[in-house]
Length: 113
Length: 112
Image: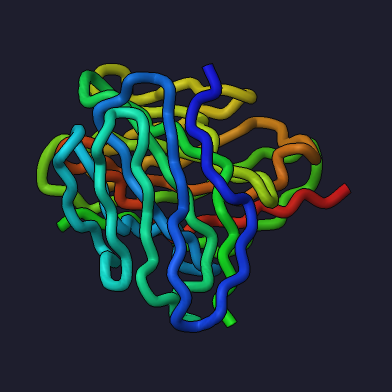
């Protein structure tokens, strides 16, 4: 199993540009989520999904869109990038049974100039 | 709403010394608690988790954590720190389906 994969690893955008961060998992996990990590802030939840076709907002959803058309994929879209979105983004997945720890991808480092 | 507090932003420990990282949580029900570790430039790796039963849980890499309901704490410990333990450590509490709320992290520095 590859686990949770994220692409790209690094990205530089100009203000106003759009892009999609890709996330995929091969563990048949129902739950997937996106976090952003900023220095001194820990990880903050952006959006999450409990299954295909179901998404919901987390703590910091503004400026981001998500969709979940398949169990495996959970892309994060920035429609109009802003410097405040400069961050490291992590995707995670888990089952929804038992004590379901989340498995994290390697992260995408995004810089918006 | 749930929250997690890690009171120490940085901790420096000598190699071979013992380690305790503090974590306090706020959650209305029985918590599911986790400790993750993040090495520089890497993703998060689960060290250990607690959901019920024995309040002292063992994890990977020689770490353990003790759940104390009366103190709303879930402190991480290791009896002898190795240089390779230098990393950032995150405590998290689970609420809802699988939503995790993280603390802001504690950076562990290991001195020779």
